[in-house]
Length: 335
Image (tube, rainbow, N blue to C red):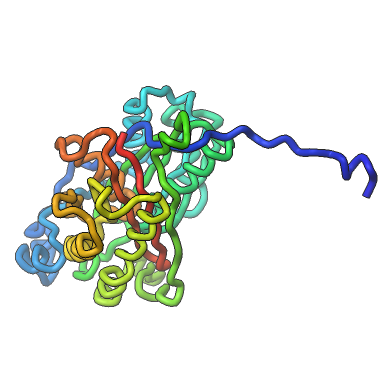
């Protein structure tokens, strides 16, 4: 190696001291499918059975004319407008999803172009139902490293394309939609709005959720996933709080992945037992939106904000979990 090579130094990007969420947006298709509607399709179920087991009353399903990218564009454009930025300010677009019709092309490049964030870096993240938290963690690091000043993070899913509508264990749960956030720089470390990500995987349980290639339908071992989530997700959430330098009592709003209302309630109960306040507000968007996989966390937060249940500056705790199995969470300051 020559002396000239040894003395060469690479220039690094100047990053921000911290990142924060600047805006929110969400989109749901218009078609509402009730529990009775599913029963009328010949599925062996009824409204009471579904409410008792998963807490869902209705969900939104997109028609054949609406694609995953269409929903990502709608939610993403709303988040950019909410942030006060223009599409040209967005340097990177990340779309978390696990339900694109094919692996190529990705959703992010199409979404970036249609929103008007042309030439932005664009890639998809597949962490299944944990995908949004994974993507948010990556976006925060991009901003802090100086790789991108503003990142549009979208969770978008068209779960209905991958459902066997005669499989009672899945067709009653999953739905379609998109939620989005814009991540940008904070002026100082004291104004940080996104805490460190607490993430991991349990690959030994990969068999519990997947796609049956013969039927093109999603399957899951519901009881195994339920047992795992109700015992393992609260510690992940508490670890995210610890990484952020806070205590459970500091959390105002808990927004877990909307997998099953019974799981949401069980995890919230464990958080309160660990010191979270009795008045902790817990997202229950699954009741009227169903399980929208990577879209569920940003969509639930946007719905809570629209209902006046979340105020700017409050502290929220996210935690997602899904196929893989994967899990991730972080503490954020609400925009």
